[in-house]
Image (cartoon, rainbow, N blue to C red; front, side, top):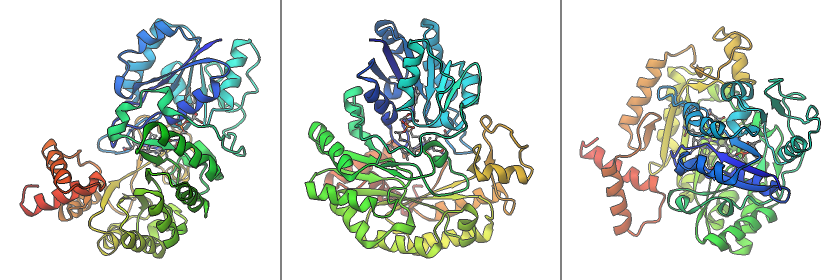
Length: 475
Ligand code: B12
């Protein structure tokens, strides 16, 4: 059997380390036809990679490129330098076998990354179907020019348009992450990632999710999802699972069905999710989520200004966000709120509309994260707006340096100042640039959790300490 080494090049550990779900799904799909190994770079950061290549002697090496930059304009972490230095260059130095790229970051900037890395092939979007076909074709010297979503170092173009298998149902396969990699370092601070669907039918003007996953929701069955969680739960015990969908409660009814299936089976797990869509919230949904085991959610309305919401094409309105906030408070679901200032139409007035919402509706025990500047990605409506406004020339690359969009109605400095003032005055609001909590704050939080036997999410304990320290004038 030919050997395939799949390498996770993501070493970011903030806000917490994320296991390589996509790579493990690929490994699961290849394992009957190839001998597969997954190298997880999150904690090892490339140290043992060359030794593994020498030992395993792969016929193909696949690199997953997830993060390109951190999307925080004034911090501007560019991950690619490390990815080249710690992973791609060392491997290239010891083997001449074909190198294949993929991953969400790669899917946004395929041509730029092919050029930067000198890789032989790349696959845009999901690759469970395409990667085995590519590897078998290469192995048997077959024609690869008909393989969709493939980029080659020769053509530097995505074959047959930019689409991907967006009409295909999502495979029922389990990722079995903990069987492919050493999951123990994730047990403390990390989560076990699960997807309940792929695709996003929303049209938020800056977002890449529909480009990466397709524009239609393609759901897995609640039975499959509960089966997966139940299997992993049996192996790893009482751990936290995180749903990594674009938005969890879309299409309407899917989230409810998943929760019902978990409740019916009486699986005792901790659950959390990103993206709750205000449009499809209901008391029934929150009640089911709590009964199923949700301990934390993210709410990402981006703005609470009616004008900005429209300009961002969020697909929901202020009354719906207000309703969602009321339900979150009523059910006291620990929530991290995310606001993104500076999009088209943002002004001083719209900033204060959002701040007013925060003050009136958000539970002070919950965290509010405030970022400014919208990362512009290719093939998004925001890219076209930036072109129309003369900020970039049509076709101009926004890969590196990244382009951030700021509304013409307020300066970047003023917006930054407003965010800083707002977060200084509120213990639960954080500017995106605020660094991780100090070791002193963390140790006080750990002590508080121990004495109070608290199982609340860590961010809530940290907010209590922040409130106390603010009162004492310590911060
Ligand atoms: C969920 C998510 C999060 C969650 C992660 C939770 C978790 N438990 O994993 C949270 C909120 C924590 C998060 C944080 C961040 N995220 Co995020 N996240 C996502 C999201 C929505 C989904 C990722 C995912 O799990 N997909 C599901 C799996 C199955 O898909 P996959 O890994 O992409 O794999 C498939 C394909 O890509 C392909 N593939 C993957 N690898 C390979 C390799 C080869 C060789 C091949 C051929 C194919 C291939 O096949 C796989 C199976 O089909 C993506 C956007 C998106 N829709 O992709 C952004 C995304 C990856 N995040 C992004 C960013 C920037 C970040 C942060 C840096 C933000 C920040 N400053 O905090 C951090 C980094 C965190 C970290 N430790 O790495 C960006 C990256 C782009 C960029 N600008 O660099 C994305 C693309 C969103 C965006 N802005 O466009 N994120």
